[in-house]
Length: 337
Image (cartoon, rainbow, N blue to C red):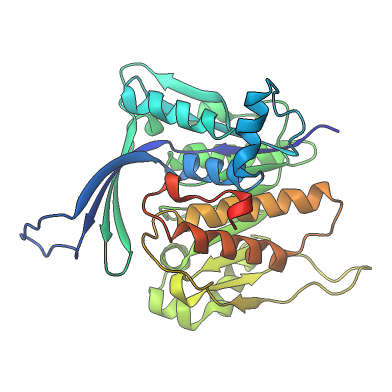
């Protein structure tokens, strides 16, 4: 039996991470506690999360030691995107490959720089603030994605660190496949979407900030009206909706109507897992990757999709990620969750 395929189309960035006792005020200069350079980008992070959370830490090294090609794996993760012709781009490609991600769809753009994320991490809370310079990510143009390359994936993951027109073209291309390719959409950083786009999304995952932007309200309003906001996204056409709320946990609602197998699971909330928070940078991407793996594993197992099962697994994985410093390097493997 051929392995299931998850394709991630999105950003690849070099992360420039500064840890600081607190975020400086306007005009203020502070000495930071540390500085490091790592691999990231929401697309690359989510691809690595899918790869790690679908296998154990030792599985890849064991296969390599015995000259195998991981033919026994149940999920193949493919990454599509662009990097610059610089050391950051080379490092990203090597890192993804080492974690078992198929990087044949990652293009090196000559004359372009790799995307860069400047990340400030506040030590006391672990909260982060991020500035993006898109670099080669901005070269992913709509005309290159008017159709999806074969073989078609079992699940396609998208974010918004590549141009919005490109993402919208990919949504249309996925819907035009026979059968349509299901899309997990994590619209971050959030931007206004055309109304038709929601109807092409099988799984919509947003945090409270992104939900507020898409809904057109404050974060406080969203957190006080989770059901109303989530149901509005479903009314716009999104099927399964998840809103992550940081320390406040998450809200979820499945799509679909009652059928012969029984009534659908109703909306629900789930508390955040207990964790010793060090750095929240990769929490969202880890959550998306874990959720995606659960979606595909349930499909391969012939099970009716259980959204609560998916968010439970994703919640646990994200809790492990925040207990380590960094972005991609903090994403856990399956046997660490």
